[in-house]
Image 1 (cartoon, rainbow over the protein chains, first blue to last red):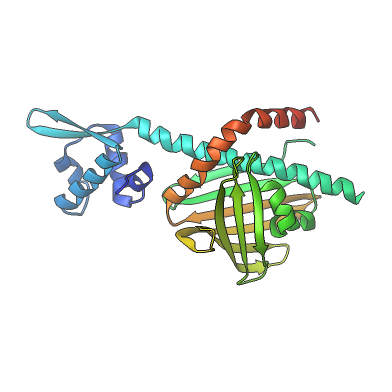
Image 2: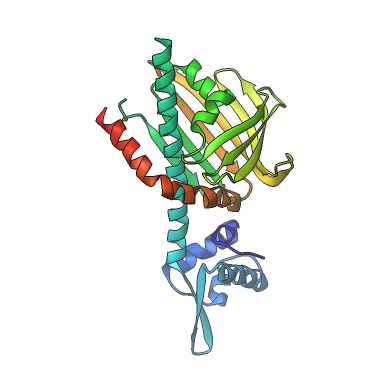
Length: 106
Length: 165
């Protein structure tokens, strides 16, 4: 199954995890302490986030730390700005159509 | 043509909703027609060099528009829209989905809500697009961005022309 950044942010718990680890790298246990769900549920979200390449894991001693891939968040913004540009283009074309019709009416 | 017309584009990623507001320097009935008549829609909806081709359009509640965005190479990307609510010259809602050439929709699609109002000869259109899947939004762009890159120089020329006026 293809994973992408939009799947990463589609779930409220995953968004909360992203917000948490944006501040500092955290272990799965310390992340789980912030949620009323099971440790397994948090692990599943971390697995999906890893597959979406939203987070990266780093081994420090016996602990695994999760941190955010800032570049991926930028990807979302880049994509949204392209969508915005698509609408700008459309509307500029519509401006032209409207002014042409207005001229014809006169 | 002055281009100090309002354009607002915001996205709420958590609710998967896009909000677009734009003002047009034209009266309400004309802007309404541009959004609801196929011969006008086809003139602006596709970002050049793509073209919009409406196969049929039946603008009434329960009616549909079956259309294609055609790439400069002639590749067709079909879509189907069903009108779910119409208040003439005020608001209309529709459900939009990609489709194959035989009108079979690919779900999930998106819910669109358009609101129109005029003030002093300027018409404001507010569009809300709710996507069941943001991935779907993403795929809308995959095709267009390529075309848009090609047309970037055209767009720059157009913008330059517009800003001179």
